[in-house]
Image 1 (cartoon, rainbow, N blue to C red):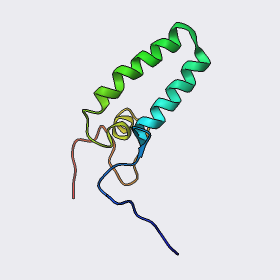
Image 2: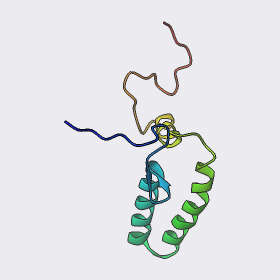
Image 3: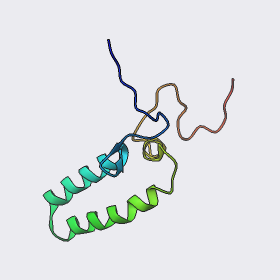
Image 4: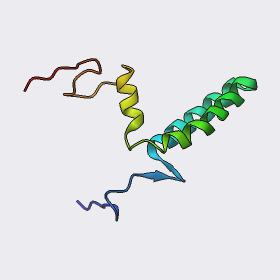
Length: 88
């Protein structure tokens, strides 16, 4: 079986000029803005234009960890977001 690896393993996956997590966020926001329409749709697009530059100042994996912190996502074999003491 022949498998291909990207030339630079340390670079994130990029779709158009967005990272993979940004691309999903952009597409879902545009989809919802088109369905909702009106002032709320334009507000969503404006919030997206403010969120993307702010998100790019954060490290990779920021969105999944933010979802984990809010309790929307669960990582396997990973402590909960409210756990403060760890015993080995």
